[in-house]
Image (cartoon, rainbow, N blue to C red):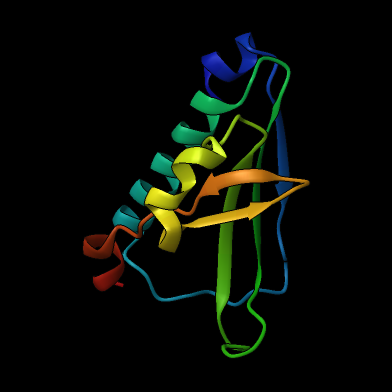
Amino acid sequence: MSNHGRKQGIQWLEEYDSSLPDIPADEFYLERLIYNLLINALHWAPRGGWVRIKTGRLKAPRPDGVFLEVSDNGPGFPRSRSRSFSKNTTSSAAKGTALRPIPDWDCISRN
């Protein structure tokens, strides 16, 4: 974790599915994508908050797929602004509103 995370007392949570297979991917671009997600989460997590990285298997319609999720307990977007991201947001009363990152298509298309 970064010095910023330690100074802010941010808790690092990891939930890895150890049964996942290796996936063919360009390591450089995948690292860049994950790094950007983690930096964003560390930036927005509040003092004493948490950042979680989680991996797992997708369910239908792609049961052969895998996912990587980076989340934090930061403020998210105000609900009043979430409409401008309607295709890329998720919202619930318990979790608030958060932007689903627009994929780095340059990175993904290489993998």
